[in-house]
Length: 63
Image (cartoon, rainbow, N blue to C red; front, side, top):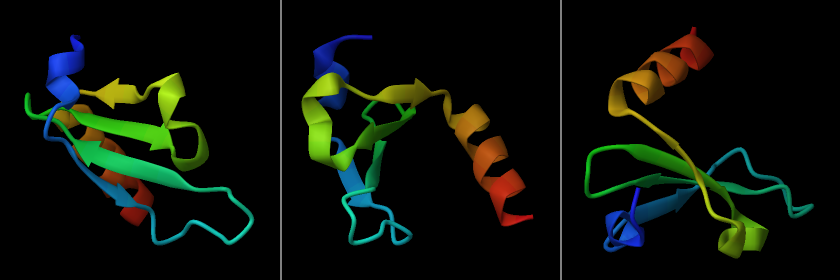
């Protein structure tokens, strides 16, 4: 993965994030892959998932 993949990413803070700085953000990358990062420490990078893997995860959480 290159840093170019993060250019133009749209990041959203989780609605489940609390006021105690336990926040995460989800981003949709240009490649279609999905990423998760720590809101308070964005410089550490992100965990990146293939789109299908992310969809499987989200569906499982919803169930």
